[in-house]
Amino acid sequence: MTRPTVVHVVRSDAFAGVERYIAETANGLAARGWTVDVIGGDPAAMRRHLAPAIKHRPATTTREVHHALRQLGRRDIIHAHMTAAELPAARLKRKLHARLVVTRHFATPRGGTVKGRFAKRLIEPRIDLQIAISKFVADATPSPCVVLHNGVQSSGARTQRGKVVVVMQRLEPEKDTSTALRAWAASGLSREGWRLMIYGRGSEEAGLQSVARARSIADSVTFAGFTPDARGVLRSAEIMLATAVAEPFGLAVVEAMAEGTPVIATRAGAHPETLGEDAAFFPPGDVDICAAQLQRLARTPSVRREIGDHAQQRQRRLFSIEAHVERLEHLYRDQLSGRGHRGR
Image 1 (cartoon, rainbow, N blue to C red):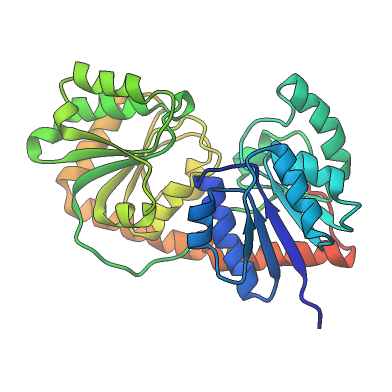
Image 2 (cartoon, rainbow, N blue to C red):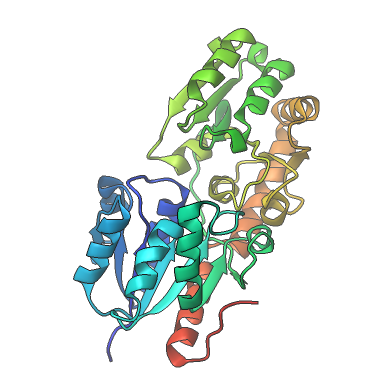
């Protein structure tokens, strides 16, 4: 029996949330008997995380994505992530005799720029199936979507936790990391031996460091940059803090859930959808309530354990990589059998 073939495509040299998702999903599909190729993402990190049988090709420009797809030849499914990869995939789908599946990872409509509007006119008529990673993203996407939540590996690992609060996100305005710093200063937890570790890079890094100095908390805050071991970091922390005002899914949040790490998050974006009530919420930008939640969890180990345990059970029930890949494979096979549809 011929193995079905799929290529996951992203125009990227990074290994952030989208690329981590692609690597785990590719591995899951390969384990279920698919021949899988991956185009894009940081070459070293992708190779380190992908199963040996999965071939990887780097692609940091749209032209490189186009070239890599042409080199691959015929594939059953092209699964593209973000507009810069969707465009060459849409152009080549007929040549490669493929069904085109795309995933919307952000709660913004396709075509926000002049180039994007041109790409939209070419891409959208050629999409066979469009997936949104959350209902929040689907509601922000005008064209039809099927909601398929991302999945992550469940965990039974245990390690010694330190008195650490972790922020793990891009340091860009939409993530509102300044609220984390201001709430940290208001909480006074640094005087009780706690530390705030901020993982991620972005355009606001220097400004955020200035905020830490101005608030006299620089000694208790570490800007740790990118980490290749996100799960290990989350597993060893007591609390995760997620301040984004419009998070489309929150892969790091769901990874924290998998590790049993309690999450304090904005009641906004997809956070209520993923966390349910298994979190300590605060209104976006509300420093006082965020600080109060930090104090409550830091000072009450039983509350931390209860929230962390409930979150871990929810992740295993709703957001496992196995369940995600099983449903994704079902959607792929519907496309190949002609039973598929574009979305709602």
